[in-house]
Length: 551
Image (tube, rainbow, N blue to C red; front, side, top):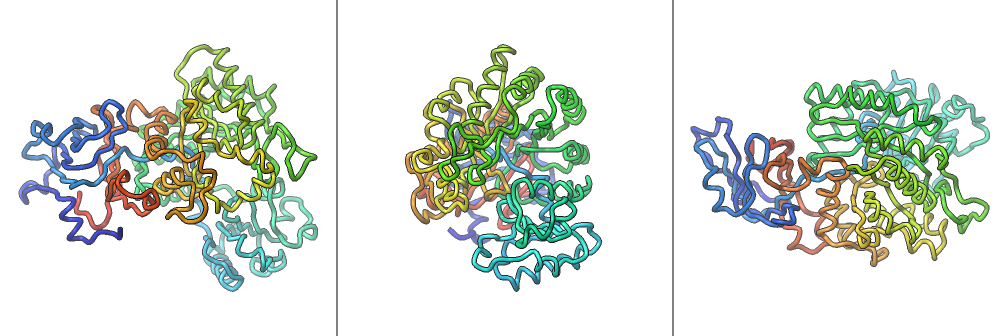
């Protein structure tokens, strides 16, 4: 369905108010005639919802709203449009990765001519920058027309240049960047780096200022709100980023709820938790919290840096290694758990998943019962014996459905690295759900699209949006109900927000989204075409589709 005309939208989304009252601030807002999907198991569907003072005052049928309508009420007729809780992106990098909006963006430059022209223009536009930094270099487009370090030296001769590829796990750099990292430029004629070399060079890029972080965040937030996102879990934050979030919150700049996972230093032990506690307690605000901790346990399967229980099929001399060994991991997790941090671990290989679950189980035994909201993120390849443990321990399994697609750019390399027998266990979302593990979904933006509707469709179909291409591992497809819950109530649980949002229930905050069609009445392959018409946070509009007349 194409974007509705102004006249059509005005009919479907009618605001009833007299001209004399239009300028007044309504005491409440009454929505009628909708397909309201609540995520409340006791009342899954409703047709009406009332918002008062930023909270949900009523959910039910249209008749039940008559006691809420006053002379100053705003009454909105949905005429069958779908309303549901605001989407959560439960694992993304909105502040650090959004700096790309302030740098050179090269995602659509697929020929040398267009790429080189764009880099020259960026170098001129950012003439005062100590480094030239670019993002989304489409490396796949240049596999048959390889680039050289000397070409980038010519384009950027006066300073280091770092051009990240579309995945963020590789970059094209010039001689000055390599030399700055202590790498002999002559040892790398292509200038393409990854793994350790990437980390060494990236660490030298000048850090962003607080003002840059906040400007980048605003650009990301505007895009997120337009996609119906009202809450995000920033999966890896440094102390300067936490302070930038805190400053943005104090300045009332945040148009969504943000939970930050403070990045744990793998070279340090439990003593760092005291610093994290102080940072958490001093920055908690209206819409921002830093009460989560992020631990990287391993790397990526396609790069042979994920930790496996058995050697790689295509590289039998290695199994990868844990970034934090159990002897150091377990006491660290125990201390974080005792301090009431939500623990969020990056795990790709089965050895990392097992180590993460072992550490969380040990912390539960040591610290006793508690209200925990721990997650393992990505869960690319789990040993079958460990899948039931997600349910038994109530550890959230956080998946990024953009990786379920057969056309995912790293899928083939990942399957080759594991071999066919183990590759069948990739991204076992349906299996974890079968064993009552809390299923959460996210974008891991910028690794995949940040559009929740695309993620929901791919989780249901295991195809590229639009039903394009083969179905990848059809046995791991999940229902639309579970996919929606993974982006709403389950994700709210994982952010320790389910008591205030994640479902449309009386007393919860009015964080919600209105869609131009009922997702349950269209083919799954059409979900990505759905338009967000309205996004509310605390009952206030943070995004309104331009065709709507809604204040």
